[in-house]
Length: 337
Image (cartoon, rainbow, N blue to C red; front, side, top):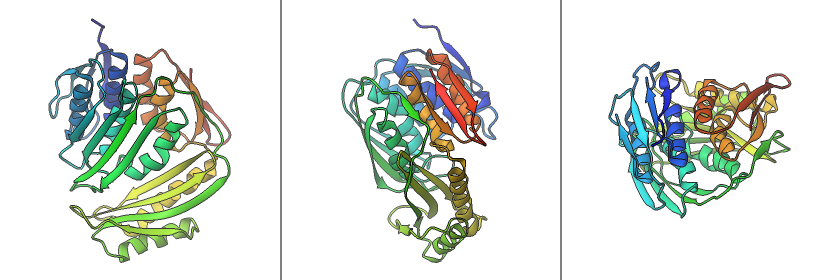
């Protein structure tokens, strides 16, 4: 029996757990994580994290000790990843996108095609919305050879949830290395307000505030009235020759619509000015695929703490080493080999 990999989850959030689950399913190496989300206001496993654990158990015929709400310690052992049709419901507005990202690497290592139906939140703060996964994340993975598709069946805003996405993941025996240093020529850009039961006035205020930061003419108001709850998500999307970036902000009680518009537009303005090929959030999400490919590199903006804690977990499971080097201005080069 393989020796348990010991991980301290106190320095990071749920991403450390999700990365460990993915790698345990792929490599067959069991792990013990203690102090899970130890520095968060509510430490331990929340409903969305627990769903990731239980989904990983089902997909890999694995076992887990400590898989209960509020648990700060987990021991996970994976079996063999099995392709098939799976359906998982988070039961809250927890992110279906993060659940998808947990299962995706394991399923592309399976020996057959898999279909997923995931229920919960599709547009919630602190997680990539569906459009980011579909238009930024998956296109980047396709450059490595990953073959997966994603469909939005129902939008689910926080806190009501009720969203649903479906995915198809096909086997991928080998991945090509990712080397993405230049974004290439700009192609097109767009503001999109995704909302439910908010009429036209609030989306209009969001767009006006964003237009004060970026003078973009292409603007869309996408009212998704069918579904539970009320919500608003602002998407600022820019496509380039070699990739795309999508910055988001969400409406919440007590936050002016103008701030929602300004926040996402400013984030895009910062990305454009950085000359990075990869945005800050995508950089974190590319670390695991790049390591599984055996190496690669990309340029990005100054990485946040998620990058460092994610790297620490990956290097415990795989024989790779990451380096973060300084480039011109705020540009950073992250490499793996």
